[in-house]
Image (tube, rainbow, N blue to C red; front, top):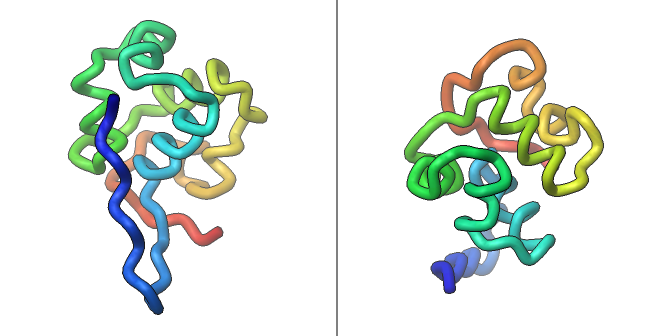
Length: 96
């Protein structure tokens, strides 16, 4: 299967990136990266890079994640307000 998430160091607060949130939402629905790639019509490698923070997600990709994962529209945008206006410029941390 996929790689296991790294455990958070004890006593430290971790603020997830948008890629980490996308991975978490996908994993909560028991979808593999390959299954998500087929659903969203984005390549497996691109989704992997986005979830790992090596690539920026487009607004269309975020909409696809919301649609295929059954999330309310703009749920991801609630964590990252810049998503609602334009393409992300980096993997900004979310405050949960």
